[in-house]
Each structure stands twice: as structure tokens, then as C-alpha cells.
Image (cartoon, rainbow, N blue to C red; front, side):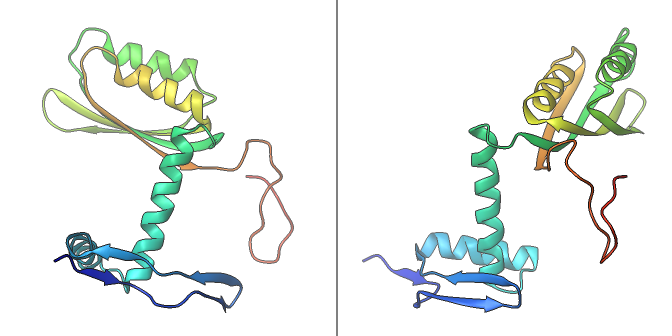
Length: 170
């Protein structure tokens, strides 16, 4: 016999200050519920709803990335490489200079005698950021690379506000 955990039993809408929230019922098998409860405990979520909202956001973001619906992004590119590899540091520096429109900042860390870690913040069209990251991580002697993408408003949009102040750009 299979048992299920039910997270909620009501379909209702409620207003939490300015955010309108929907209450839904989700039925999960016991194994999935146990795994979710383990993640909730490990990450210190206050309740199941917070965890499920985060998981839903993550899933939606991944779906939007896969389908090309996130046009602009901020990317965090991290990669390790052998700094003694012939001309690699020079090639990487040239690549970043050639794409200065995408590269906001970089941090360089010496991991040991041979390996370095580079963490770069990129901003621009998602396709261009991904293409750039693929180019960097496919360089010979780059030993590991990963790109994290965060949705971002379009470049050139009007500035933002701090509190009640006027809109401005940085």
C-alpha cells in the first residue's frame, strides 16, 4: 500500500500585506516528502511552504533558461585552471578584454602551486553570456567551469529607486 503526505487541504487566496498568495494542495509520496523534509531541515527553512516556493522558483528559472525566455542575465562564472599552462592566462585575459561589455568584475584566487580559481561576474544577453562562458571553460587547461545565471532586467531600462527617492542609474 502506498501512503501520501498532504501539505494543504484548502484552495484559497489570501492577502499577505501586499503579496497575494495562493494556497494549493500538493500530494507527495512518502519518499519524496521525507527527502523534502530533510532538505528543509538542512537548509533551515521555517516551513514547507518557503521551501516549495524556492523549489518552484528554481524550476521555473531553469525552464525559462532552457527555453530562451530569460533574455538578460547576470552570470557568475567560476572556473579553475593550470596557471602554468602555456599562454593560458594571456588567452583568458585577452578573451575578457575582447568581451569587456559582458565582464563586470573578476576575482583571482591561488589554490595551490599550479591551480587558480577565477570568479567572474558577467552581465548581458543570456545567449551571449552563455556563449562567452562556454568559450572560457572550453579553453585547454581550464579544468572545471560552471556558470550560474540569475535573471536581470534589460540593459538600458530606466534606473531604480532607493526608498522614496527619484529614479537613477548607477
